[in-house]
Image (cartoon, rainbow, N blue to C red; front, side):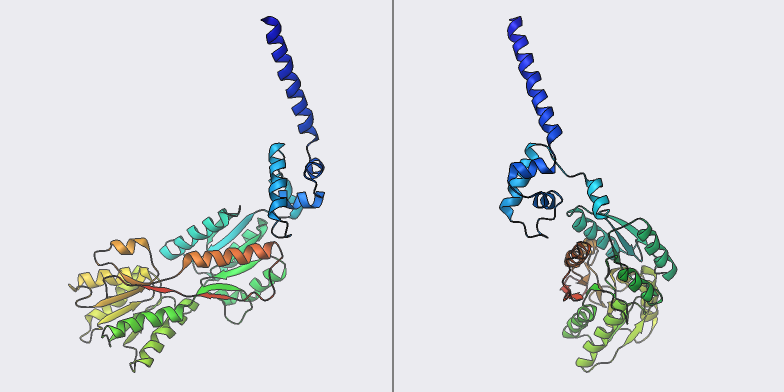
Length: 358
């Protein structure tokens, strides 16, 4: 019995010794020898660059199977140091209290998280100085790329942002673009979204359609305003009212109170964001009116909570998931330096979500 136990222990020990000896020998050359592929091919597969170098799926599968068998994996810290990548990205947004930007952060975190990147989020409060400070802090942290929702004063930083790109740091604007620059962007077709919303109100018989806008100097506001004007013009109508200058509840509430206090009231309001629309709803309630019987309301941006309002809000939905995908595609191709020179700025089409407020 004792002899049998001894033999088992000796066998286990010898196997452990053999495994340890093999493990000590396991390196990229060992995997290359076992797989039958070159060291450079193995390196590219292990470092997750197979697609970039057009390595076949069969080769990739075989190399990964052998590396898993022998417990060989790339050291992520060493890889990042070697290729000078941190697998960290920066995202600057104007307002983290705005549901649209909160949703944008969520989507971008998810899209890049799937690809092994973490995201540092900074709030600029729509301030050019805070924007530049945030950009500098991100660059100091050796991030791989930057996503920027430009502040309303971003034109002050336009040249500086272009210089960042010239230094080789991938950067793309999201949701807003900066006029008179070549900075790439992915945005919603805001003009088309507003045009569709106002056209829908006109189809419902409305002629007195007021517009409560957001930050007048921001590209989404300018484009939505143009869509509002164009839809009315094409229907032979004139703007009833355009007012406001903030994408927040206070703006919506105060502007709606002005409108509802007049003898000549609008029959419908186009609010340029869901936050503005919530302020309008508060005013409508305080004036003892009901939607859509007394007045209709059309918002912009979609959130799940809009379905659960006393009167669910009809709105223009921005395709945030698509925006996130396109931004991820651009940045990762830029980081890997395989971006096609023919890549063009992307404008994605919004859609109407018809609920009960119209």
